Amino acid sequence: MNVNLYKYEQVFQNLDRDNLGYVTLKQLYFALNTQLKISMDMKTLEVMMTLVDDNNDGVMQEDEFCHFIYICENADFNDTKSILFFAADDDYSGSIDKFELLKITKKLKLNLNQSQVFKTVQELADNDDGSLSYNSFIKVMNEMIPQKQTVEPQMEPLTEQGVSKQKKTLVKCQNQKILLKNATISFI
Image (tube, rainbow, N blue to C red):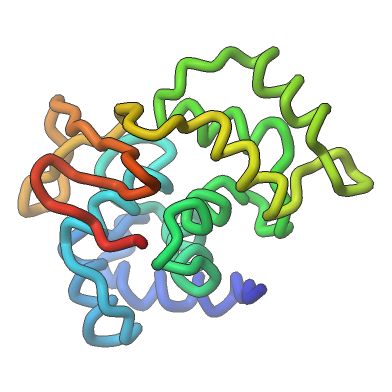
């Protein structure tokens, strides 16, 4: 597992030349394709934004950017649940604790309460610290995201400047694919 927070922070500071404390989706898209050599279309980038934009402001602050790059460096983009695992792994530990699982289930609007999520982690934890390994996380996701269930993450469409508007976009999990309106995001 790759984690280089110093490198991520340096890249962010290079992108945030105006010292605004954030980068827009447009800036990030340009940087991915030119400086970082990560091939990602805008629709995929928007879906990824829903997973890391903790304050739902439509731009990436430094900590959100670092998390985004962590996902890009470690997740298998042919496997949606791999992306979800690294998106849930807020502390870059390589495992998912009960609070991280609760957070990702809320982003996916899975309608699970805190006690349900905590009980699931308690029952399936396979690490000494009471957290879920990658394999256990996949089992949990297979149970929590039934096929053909529609979920609605906290995503707000962005203007050209990266400022969010008050409208949510439906995302569907079907057969482990993520669909954004009519465009299929090629995670698997």
